Image (cartoon, rainbow, N blue to C red; front, side, top):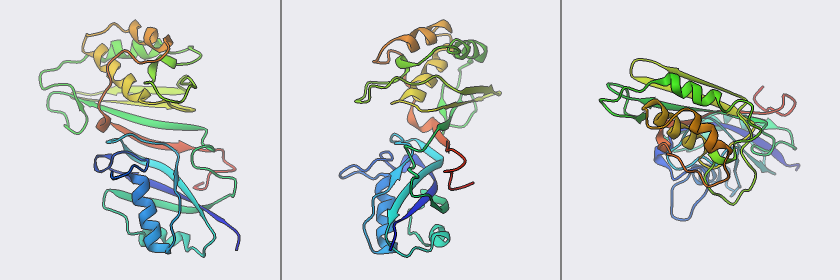
Length: 247
């Protein structure tokens, strides 16, 4: 029997896990998926994710894949897998043999949520008495335009590739909440949380807008504030049309 590559579109509450990646003695999304597949298919299989989300980071559009030489009723997987309530399998599809959830991706899109005053507490709460000004934060983001890379925004890691520039960004604010959305070909360790942390500092008047670009130009390590994980959600992983299993 030939190998079948199966792609999974996932949503999960990151608060229930120590991140995506399998860790000894810790609950992880990868481990929960592999355990569910083993229970359903009777064989231990390795699952690969598009993004190694940190502990506490949520997902609405995480993509994973596995390969198997087994007869699999792929359309029935969403209802059949014994997943914990904190993970939802939104879709499953047969992918091309060359598809890889991580290395085939051409971009990712994330959202970061802030709140203050009477705003929701499940976002990065800036304080009941906070009065953030988001125009300076917009100016800080515009200062990143044209930079060839954002090497200073990432925390230290074993990977040495600098963060590529953002493809697009938006920052929308209301009476007691604000939402940052960013898209790029790739993101490095803690990059979005570092970006969100410094934007909050700028909005609260603790840092000048031009300091974000200055930090982004630097080499690691990151020297600014880091926002908490629970405000961050992976929204979407994008693939070339000819490889996207969910098109």
